[in-house]
Image (tube, rainbow, N blue to C red; front, top):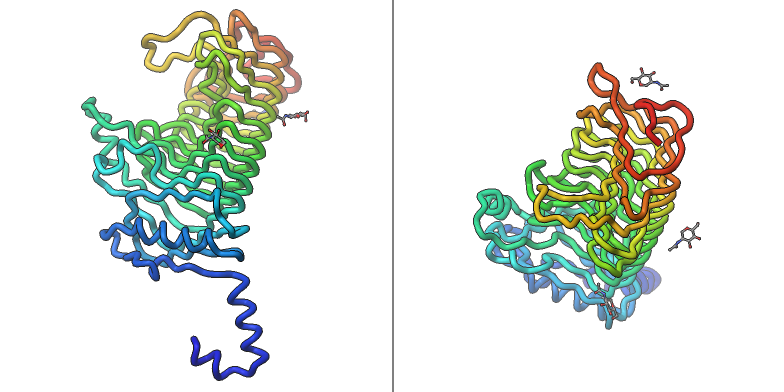
Length: 391
Ligand SMILES: *[C@@H]1O[C@H](CO)[C@@H](O)[C@H](O)[C@H]1NC(C)=O
Ligand SMILES: *[C@@H]1O[C@H](CO)[C@@H](O)[C@H](O)[C@H]1NC(C)=O
Ligand SMILES: *[C@@H]1O[C@H](CO)[C@@H](O)[C@H](O)[C@H]1NC(C)=O
């Protein structure tokens, strides 16, 4: 490089220096990362981050092609000087395949208190199979670690990333503002436990678009304190669908509002559009939700509000949910249900659902009429209705 610079006219030298100083690039291989998938590259990632973070100009961390074993990475942003950090990944980042190494850690790759961080491309492979096998065998196993976490952060872009086979949730967005997840692929086997695709909680202004998600749990799950969430153009399956909840476990709990879910195809999933709450006291709420242009292909519970949520029917509370559900619109929902009850509103006996709206629903069950079932649900239906509305 310096040979080149010396031999260029002054004009080009200045141009080069200007360019070089305006975007600094930190290649993890220069920090000792090995692309053999076997040597732990954690230190290289953390060192590259430290330099990118200290850079006074926008910085790019580059992960070239190859496989990099990463035991854990914690990227803290509070003291960063750089105004923007990009992680450009051409390679694959591997978690240890032996679950005992990080199975008791909360997070595998975690960004905390960062602003303007973008991730482009790359594959994260959580190698969760050994943990799932342990859990499935009923042995005493660690809970497992989250794949990629952003916590307390803002202005985040994740684009073109593939996340597969995480021990637990693949991508967690917690206490963040302004997050874009675009063109993301998440995959894990349909029988892998707790492998939610993307979980969002205590966050606002999050968009998830043009993504394909298939896992053993929810494709997207939406926790307390989520507002202004936009989900569009998603293929979901296998998995448990898109779920708001579980909510209402806590007495004091932040609500969920202003969620749009648009142009989604569910294929062979356990649920399509689900809202679930525990049947106990809470000040939580769910309001102003729009589900539009949704296609169901052989989905067990295409439309469901379950305020008596009780997984495995074991030791659940039955006090009646305190979570107030209102203004939920279902518009242009069509396709096939895998069970007879295609629409189920099982709302709280203490706080009935209000303002539920069904507009143009066309769901069939094999060659028989599908059914709708309502308990404590108020609202109205308009346009085409199959099954016949129970509102
Ligand atoms: C976010 O940061 C605030 C202030 O530092 C802290 O109180 C809070 O616990 C953090 N939240 C999370 C989820 O880390
Ligand atoms: C939700 O949307 C409503 C109506 O657009 C708006 O008034 C309200 O501030 C939004 N809520 C949040 C938490 O941003
Ligand atoms: C409802 O769906 C069936 C099966 O796909 C289709 O034949 C029918 O035309 C649809 N009806 C309306 C009103 O969209």
